[in-house]
Length: 224
Length: 186
Image (cartoon, rainbow over all chains, first blue to last red; front, side, top):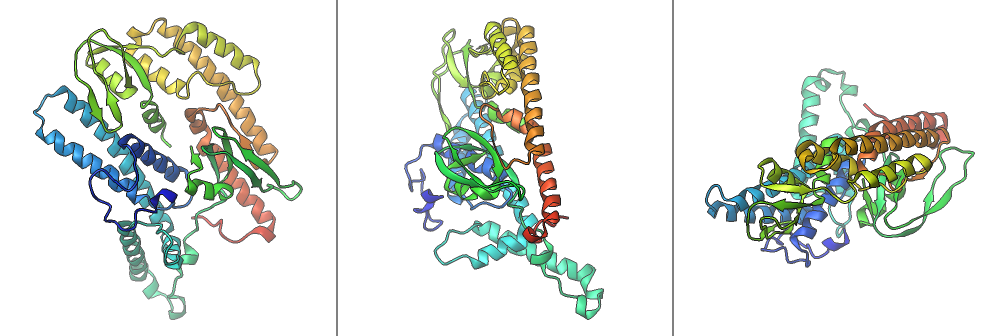
């Protein structure tokens, strides 16, 4: 997400999302890219709250305008349909992030803890609060129903070890947006040799997520 | 991914309609549309075209590839070649279904088109199954899948990816050196 550099704080909530010159149509396209990537990647991707916020602004802005239009206007109904479509993508995107947070919460929180001072955060502030609360609730639930009735030496549970990590070795389908050279493909079995492939722009591939995970976050490939 | 979501993506494609009403330019978030004048063709996204059609406010002009002669050519080529030929449209299956279900009266020879597209689809899916089979039996780590459409990928996604993951788990248990204990699942 190199284009997120200018999003220093969450105070970018002025009108028109001025941090980079992007038309609303490009913004929607960005949201759809983020949506598909998030849907198909096995791990939680970096948050795109700058995109989410701008889209929210556009939607509220449009809805405010529609308030002023009288009922039965032909244009208004078309605008509403478009808003509903965008809202669907937006909520599906946020929902799939929440599902992943619930599934991998100890690891997500661990990564958040070990991240350096200047590194971008994986979670948005709201998602971070959600993950922390989910963690506390799971722990106290386990304690209340089972752990406190166990012998003292068995009362501790390490969630980091018990909750499975995202499997980065899963295969994913992807489409190449920027040409890449010399991607190393690791062999499946010991008697095969590793080899390199070039990813041509516009071509589609099936390979392990681990090999191309960096390209997904840089935006050079799109998961499909 | 749900097939309906793939259809949702296909609805973003544009299609020509001939409206029977007039309306100024509309400034949607995703771009400007119109102006609409009775009898003058205009490009709109499929979702809007279908809505207008259902309210009997327009006639849909079928996309260029949705034509019996062209589809017959594609079908024959698809049957002749061993590899995937370029699909008539990246959303040919979804668009055929949507347009034929909601606007079959605007599309000449709708039934023939339906059969042809189904033939093309069947041929391509058969090839897809064959290549998935050889992908698995040769234990490949990478495959290039140009010309496959999203709907085609989607029909095989869950089954293929889950089986690959399962086999990977089994294999990494056979090779204890590479196991890191992270493939545990519920």
